Image (cartoon, rainbow, N blue to C red):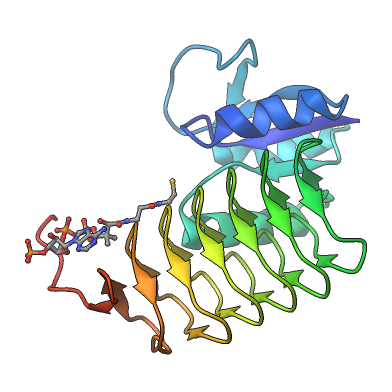
Length: 209
Ligand SMILES: CC(C)(COP(=O)(O)OP(=O)(O)OC[C@H]1O[C@@H](n2cnc3c(N)ncnc32)[C@H](O)[C@@H]1OP(=O)(O)O)[C@@H](O)C(=O)NCCC(=O)NCCS
């Protein structure tokens, strides 16, 4: 299959490698910033040229952006333009036959998805993350590299679980919440909450812009 990749930043790299490991051809990249080819994949134009690429006959796309809000928006734009969003599972990932992955879900190398776990549209389970049995990841959730979700954890839409965080069994993380890298989460996190530390507590407000 020839696949268009949206985004040419950091996450585009493992996405390109995953596509090639699965035997797909990377048709090229769309990104608003100019720049060199990425791992030999050429930039074809800005994100706004999506419809033109569809008119050229491309019909499958992967949204290779770590930002959950943008990934969800661009997945919707892809669908509206008539692109299929294939599920991407790296050959070195382990996904239970009893797990359910919706369109555009991405499972990177060495991730593990347990039985009766589910991941919504364009959810991203990053390198080496463990999503145990019966976990439920909503649309565009992102489980960072090496994070561990014990059984029956729920992560709401666009929720971010930072790298190496551990979520104890049954914890519920609300939509648009952020769990800091390395956190140990033993209690529910509300929608939009920002929690970090061991044990996880609400984080101070953001210092950056
Ligand atoms: C939690 C996080 C989102 C905060 O980033 P930010 O919004 O830019 O906020 P700041 O860096 O200004 O930090 C705000 C406060 O949170 C603290 N903080 C930041 N990261 C933290 C962490 N991992 N654990 C505990 N506290 C943390 C900061 O020390 C600061 O507290 P202070 O004011 O007492 O010094 C970010 O540090 C993080 O962990 N992101 C996850 C990244 C990740 O793993 N992505 C996976 C995809 S590759």
